[in-house]
Image (cartoon, rainbow, N blue to C red; front, side, top):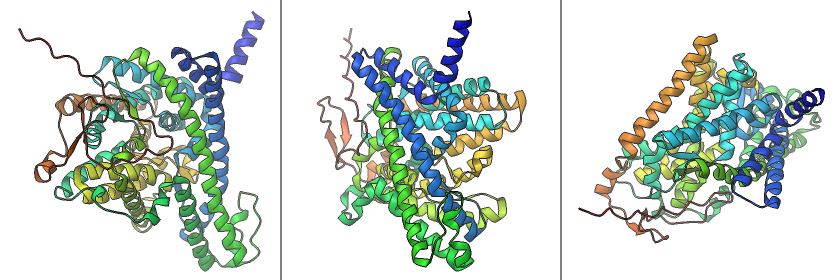
Length: 527
């Protein structure tokens, strides 16, 4: 029996406890379920493993590039400042919680398939990296309360499974308004921002024309490349903070900013100091690009594998896909949403600095370009669908406020991870993580009971929305259509399903293509 114990110990400690290997194994299982060839199975598993390792490597670069900025913010404001970047905080958390995250993610996906099979919430969440982000968030929040690994994985897995089917249901009336069909759902944890944007558009934009009826300067379209936008914005943020620190603290203190925690050299003069700021901004862009490449690598292998598993368990369910799936429906709204959301982030930062940090001790949350681009762009599309131009601007602006204040509240329940210079950036991570974390402060069994009840409340609310709102065909833009009827165009797939006549553009790189509309069943014969 000695050899068996040795083998089991090796498998648990050296393979199953290593999240990169575990992701590769799960990918292989999914590809086997899809009856792929041996070469495709091996290649897919290796690519998924490498993608996970890329996330960790990129996270190290992000951490190094954020350290001097945190020093600058503290020097200028005396407050703790963070930049929400999901990939960065997930990468940092892998060192301590990697195996628990992997097991929780697997259990959560299984729970979501069971819920999709046996409840009205027939959605299969296929945005693999957001599953990973939410699994990491739940692991960090639950583990920070001192709970055992078994409790963290079991309770966190159930909560993750609920979120994977509940959030697409909450957003689906608004998603159908965007796409004009019932063939795809949104599977992205910025859902609260999209619902707020759609509701805001409904309130303010009944007579506002669509963003697609206006032209935007070609010179701004380079911002749609998230790597360029991230590097440029971080470069500008670094330069502004560097100048402010230089003015406030003087050369002696400011020149040491880049030598703190990163092993960098003390600046030799003002020119060298400013160019180090430029380089750190560009390094952040490179780091995020490495992480995003790792995420895309995982996404390209893990999502098809998950889809293969799901097809065996929940046939006919709607796929819930990543936020860029809505980008083609309103090209101009994406850019307007990004700018409006970022503006909301700046105003939120000002409010945190002058009001909420002094009064409540909330951390300063700097506008992160990655969450503002993806969630702000999608919020612009949702706001435009119900409220035209005004809806896109106001809806995305409110999204920007949400993803500024919610991360500040979330930091209060992240334990030691609240001291990092980055955190989770999208709206659902903020509100759900803060609720679970504060509920867990009750401690012991009472805390677990409150956490489970919160999860059940979310599930019950989603089932109610599905039955009373989604299944009844409620259209959040019906009032606007009565005042400004929009054109309808036949779907290109020839199924007869209608879609909104928005200008179409190619989806962004890495965005999954919507599935074809299901064929309509033959009408039953009348007696």
